[in-house]
Amino acid sequence: MPRYLRACVPGGTFFFTVALLERQSHLLTEHIDDLRLAFADARRRRPFTIEAIVILPDHLHCLWTLPPGDSDFSVRWHDIKARFSARIPPGERLSARRLKKSERGIWQRRFWEHVIRDERDFWLHGDYIHYNPVKHGHTEKAADWPYSSFQRFVQRGFYPLNWAASEKVCDLTME
Image 1 (cartoon, helix red, strand yellow):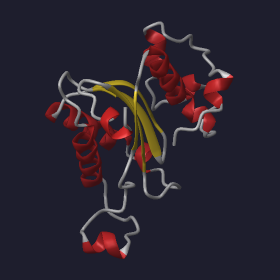
Image 2 (cartoon, one colour; image 1 turned 135 degrees about the vertical axis):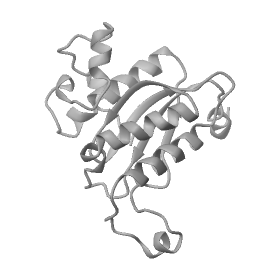
Image 3 (cartoon, helix red, strand yellow; image 1 turned 90 degrees about the vertical axis):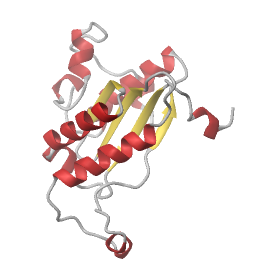
Image 4 (cartoon, helix red, strand yellow; image 1 turned 30 degrees about the vertical axis):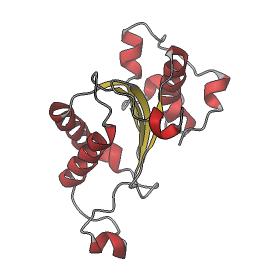
């Protein structure tokens, strides 16, 4: 199936990578409550289920499942980005193009998405999400990162508290 058709799976589960324009920034963790509110507002307007998530200082990864018959994740990301940007004080560097368009210079315009094909694919991406703070050197153990769904996975019995990613997950690149 062509890639552009796979991305339009109504009610599907998707993996996303969404990044800030300035990859050295810490806006996402510095303004974590604003980001949480942006997600909550977007979910009230257009529901979706967050299966797994990790918020790092400059990017995030997540798994979403959309409602049956719905494949429009792009409008949801636009909503989240806009609401987050509106909540935080200005101060970022702006290109001439962004100034001309009256855009904030916070987010990369695009995001990366992948359609989850099966249960194995779901768990591989979930493991990648929870390993990400370790991969980027923010913590030594996934359990120690506060901006992640890892603890929820432990509570539900999916991971032991001392979980460590497999070598396969450690070698993955999805950004």
